[in-house]
Image 1 (spheres, one colour):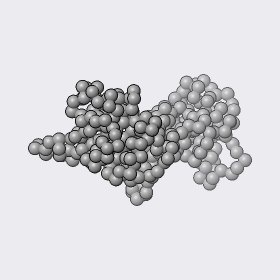
Image 2: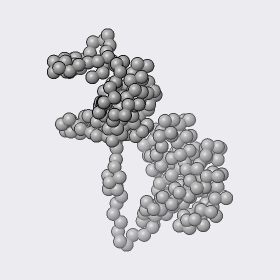
Image 3: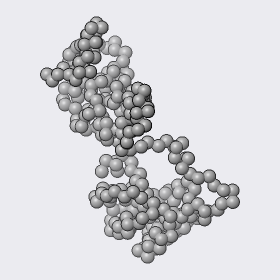
Image 4: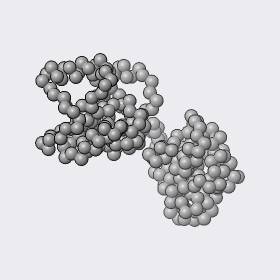
Length: 290
């Protein structure tokens, strides 16, 4: 056991655990000793979920030493250096092969840089399932299986007009591919009628690639009409951050039907953030970090 000793008194439970370890014949070594090469396993319990900043230098050196050692690493609760709320890694961080977390999954184990450093994630509620079920949570995690149950079964006699009307807005100069892939994904996901509003030069290539799409030039008139027509709006793929995209987003942001914002819509949202209950956002880690 290598320990970073401190002048501060240990919390009661930690002090009891330390005493039990010593009474059982265990030894506590200073963290700066030379590590034996014959180590079979490294257990990381340096830092907990309360970390809010980069580890201090002495801890960082221990983390770097552990990462450079050939033995596999098992992290207790969370890899040291990973922020439990955000998944950010502001400094040195343990690169664990396995992470065993307890009581509840921490947001930072599933977001940000977590997948780079947690290895295989294991979870145990420690018998607190009933208590956890009554707690309020800031976020929820859904599996693909859970989301699939949101889709209503389709009647054998149904047709495209019964399966919703979707308008997708984006595809500035040079980014027609983004809007094409979004339209194709919407069709594959089961949207009945899919309309795309984009630059005029994108119309012919999109219709050639996907004639099922209804493709129109994005103007204020076509946008106004499409917002009235649609059940759901998607905006952002290839939208860009120039005036063309900004004007479209300003028009859409007051739309009260369900919306999905992605890509450049999120970059613009980061400049003027607000909350709307009718909006779903789908950021990748870089966009979420803004």
